[in-house]
Amino acid sequence: MPKVIYITTDEARHEVEVEAGYSIMEGAINNNIEGIVAECGGACACATCHSYIDPAWTDRIPSMDDMEDSMLDAAFERKDNSRLTCQIEMSDALDGIVIHVADNDY
Image 1 (cartoon, rainbow, N blue to C red):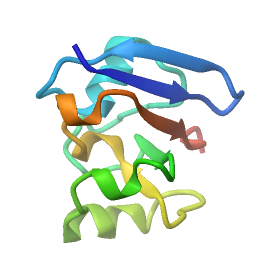
Image 2: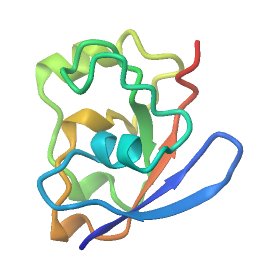
Image 3: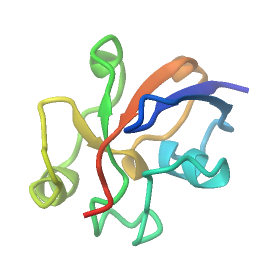
């Protein structure tokens, strides 16, 4: 099963298995990763699963659509590598992806 490495705002590193087909947000929720709030449950309607994709992985994930881009405008401290983790589906190709959790407790 592919793994995701979540780095929380306190710099704690959490390496967890996330089943292919699940979103990176679902992997965080299922493994109690602090900082991924996911108030909307993955509907791309709240930006509380906002995270920063490690630069080594930004070119390896699918491009965001207009809805995600618009929702990220509401995210706190949006950066060039900001993404909503509810919109990234886990696959074997993303095994080992590193996600830096944003400050979503605002």
